[in-house]
Amino acid sequence: CDAANIERTLKASEKQIEDIEYIMNTEGFESLTPELRNMAELRLENPEFSLRELGESLTPPITRSGVNHRMNRLLQIADEIFP
Image (cartoon, rainbow, N blue to C red; front, side):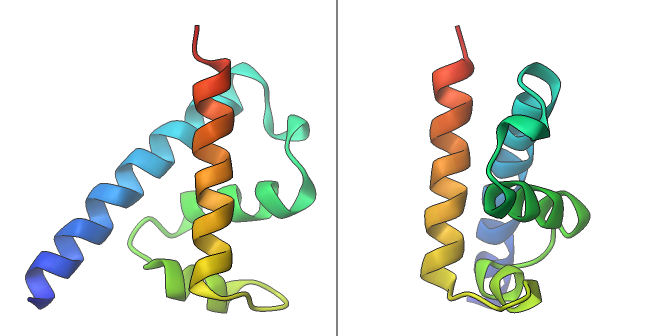
């Protein structure tokens, strides 16, 4: 189970990083709100972190659900930019 969870986390992280890099290379981080920019930077710096670990790393910390919401928003932004 642990190996499967780690693999799932890494696959999700790869997709999130792709979306964040796409946003960064097209619209730039300045197009994001401070909360989304912080989340994007934290994900790029810590690709191995779970959503819970990302949330705990923020100041102030946020819940796993809050991190998931921000990641989904970043995905939505990347999808809106993609031609």
